[in-house]
Amino acid sequence: MEFLRNIYNWIDVRLGTHEIITEKRTGYLLPRNVNAWYSLGSVLLVIFCLQIITGMLLMLYYVPDIDKAFDSVSFIMTEIPLGRLVRLFHAVGSSMMLLVLLLHMFSILFMGSYKSPRELHWLTGFFLLLLAMGISLTGYLLPWNQLSFWATTVATDCASSIPFIGENLVELLRGGKQVGLHTLGRFYTLHVGLLPALIAVLIGVHLFLIQRTGVSTPPFGLEDTSNQWKGESFVYEEHPGGIPFFPNFFLQDMISISLYLACFMVFVFFFPNIFIPSTSYVPANPLVTPSHIKPEWYFLANYQTLKLFPSEIIGLTVQAIAMAFLALLPFIDRGEEKHPLKRPLFTFCAVSGILLWIGMTVWGLYS
Amino acid sequence: MRRWGIILMLLAACVMPSTQAMGAAPQVIVCIQCHAAQPARLSDPVTLWQTSIHAEHGITCNACHGGDPMDAANSMDPARGYRGVPAPTSVPALCGGCHMGVTKHYMNSAHGRALGRGGPTCVTCHGSHDITRASLELISKKNCTTCHTFDKALMIRRAMVKTDGMLKAIEKRITILKSQGIDTDPLEKKLFSLRNRFHAMYHSLDVTLIREESAHIQAELEKTSGAGGAGTGYLVGVIAVGWALLAALLFSMIKKNID
Image (cartoon, rainbow over all chains, first blue to last red; front, side, top):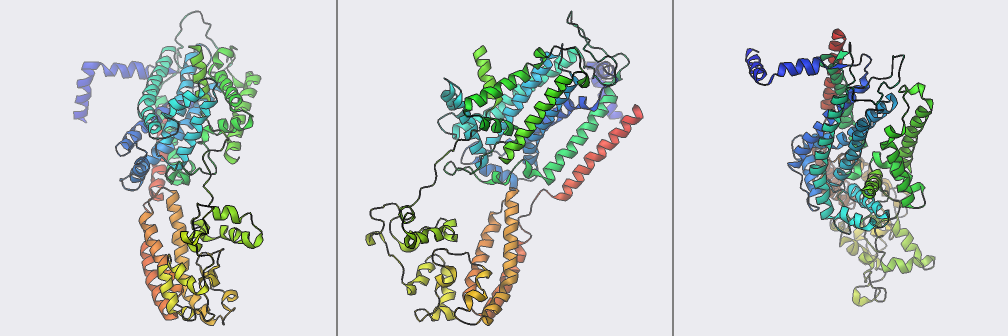
């Protein structure tokens, strides 16, 4: 212990770490009515770190070549000690990351935390969701199995519906006319290079924004639940008499992270096939089309929506409008009230939208 | 800039599948193309074959009847190997071209020795076009009593029941392991070899030999029953989930104390 204390002191006299811990953590106060939903951001950070670690471990043995990719994944799963576990952590983790991201987004939505002056927080979060979907889509192709090959073929083909540039865009995505070696190369580069870097930068921006504006006050347990920001000047939202981040809310973060890990490991150890169906273990064959090609669960609603419209471009346009509406929500909803029960029209629309999304997902799954 | 924004949103919104069919259907050989459109006498073989184990494994008409399945004009030309309907006495040799182990046992059995004198050939039990998978169900009162009593056949069947059950159980296990991404290749190869040895033995009709061989095969199958199961392990899962829940409880208790 003495040795550790000496190391701590050695660092502290040089960097003033004690001051950082005292002022920035213990002195960093959160609203008294802060709730467990606020810890989902920390859970997401842990998930992202786990994805990076497991992804780097997989990269040690994965070969991004159409003749070797499937075998290298099989090799990881069957020959490398703990390889199967690492791969399951990574594959199940990507789905869980999107699930937690959506929950985080819904909680922000219902607590009105996206309202001024936090429009940029919402926008960065929205783009993080898009990037998470993108990194999941690009990672889906890498095992080069029948399911991933055909899902990517159909997914990239969808871009051809965009007027004027559609065909060129498909070729740009695929690196050729068909999904093949160049597609795998492109998706691999995006998956392990560009997208993680963009996500890391955007997470940094998101955290910076939260640090600058302060944590928003939840609208529960208060009489006045309206937005206090008037837009006259920059104001850091302080919470005098609030609870310190460390150790109080840090412990809440740890509780949420532990509970998340428990749920995550239930899926990894007992139900991995929910996220990795058995057809994922068949190598890709460009000459044999499976009877049913379905995307991952987080794209099922989009998939089903496209099927409802007579032409793909209409389906795409409708979804683009819906996504644009979601992205621009803080600029559209300018009301001051934050409590969900005191703005019934918004709550009704939001609940209906979420139920519609769930309904379309289930419909897509069983259609 | 605005245009790129729209494109980005369109892409991001749904890089999603369409319902349009992709890829080409497998090519149908000319024998089926032509016969399927003929009256019942000529089209029935196609219908029956489609339900067969041969169809399941892609063994088409030309494997037994010869000819060129890719050339409509010359498909039934003897110069291309077309042999038409095989003579009953040539059936065991024809089938034995692929099922070698079976032919040896069959030719030494009472069935084989009666070949050409009213004795059964392969198609008598397995069918000629609706060829059924070799199974214990084929040794039935209905099939066997068309020529003789069921007594001896029943003894053979009883001697094979346990091994057959073990084979089916391991097949089922392989399917499950496969669906979990576990490499079952060595196990499948071993099972394939043992199953072939077992199925070939059916045809000897020698009850003593069947009993002895069944015991050997059962011993081999016992060895394989534990193989291939290098799964993540439920016990490790229970411990990991338990630790995570315990940690949550511990943090919750500390938090309560501090609050």
